[in-house]
Image (cartoon, rainbow, N blue to C red):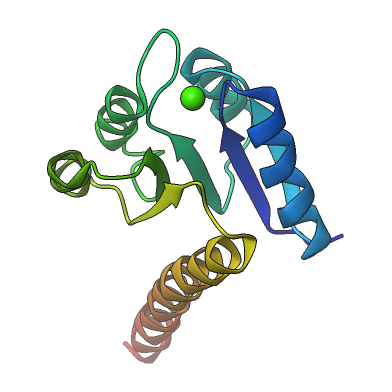
Length: 145
Ligand code: CA
């Protein structure tokens, strides 16, 4: 099992279970939440590498959840892939403006889902490595002075 944790937020049990099984099949560690409120309490305990977030949730929506995360400095850098129904182009723009990193349209193919998950993790993982390099450089400068 990989150390890469992915939080899946989806209220429909069969869809959430399919997402979890697909990701676990690729070796990811999956956390499941059936609502935005569930996901908020999960994020109080740990920080996943990625959140797969359904737009249509009971209680707070995926969009509201995204905006809530982006207001929190501890959470705003966690990448989000939003799940939407087909044909919601205007919603996609609103989501991207709120800070969503990518979309998967339902019904989704597992191949496309995994490709998008890997692409987002690659992108965000690269950013972390750049930050570490910058930090190391600063430390070297400080010991020289
Ligand atoms: Ca849903």
